[in-house]
Length: 97
Image (tube, rainbow, N blue to C red; front, side, top):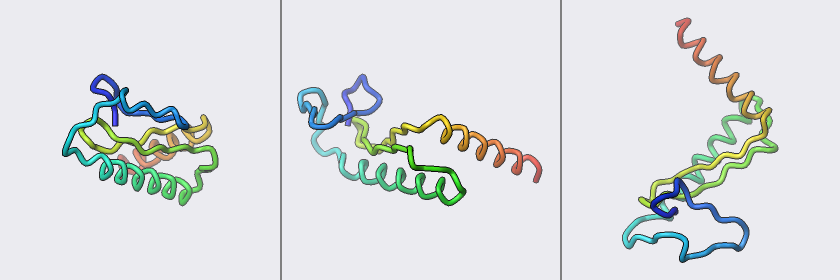
């Protein structure tokens, strides 16, 4: 979850401060987090399946203030470049057909 002026809530270690976030009654934060967790796992699996080294990939599930899921990615430069190459190749294939 996040405060209204933040994109996503970030928790590092045991530094959670419940006063630093806004909790809205009735919002399903857990559902959004689960969806983000599943999406992060799917991304990692898909990248590994096409040969991208995912050993340094960090994908953290979070939620926004409205309860929607967010995946925060921290990737090594090599992983980013490998994904860029995949996207460009996919675009080339799409244009060619």
